[in-house]
Image 1 (spheres, rainbow, N blue to C red):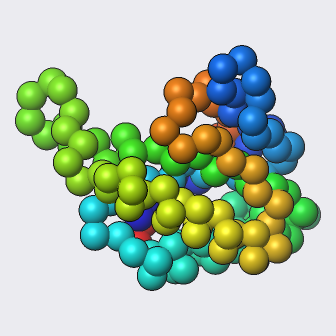
Image 2: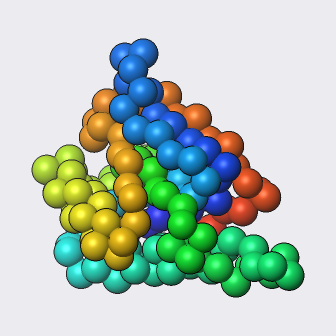
Length: 145
């Protein structure tokens, strides 16, 4: 399981011209699930993301988590995080989990983030989404279990 975590000023996701999820300051989490992933990966990854110290303290050092600064999270499932581009010009996605495996694990990850005390918005699984990201910093971190 991979989470591409971006510190954002704001972020939103739109499906069919309608905003389905939006946050202010916090984390944009693009979440990839691979074949073989299980609930164990989500249980490890959610608290890691919620407690990542990627927000500045009063001295400007990255010492605060999204929880400490009262931020929110927007989680969007993204199987393309498991693209393999080593051969040819067309990415292969064979490492990405099938939808029937990935969807419940994405939901579990969101549930676990909420259990950490985070307000979480989401995209719509398998929908064609327009994601607006106002990356702050920019700060982007890849977290993988």
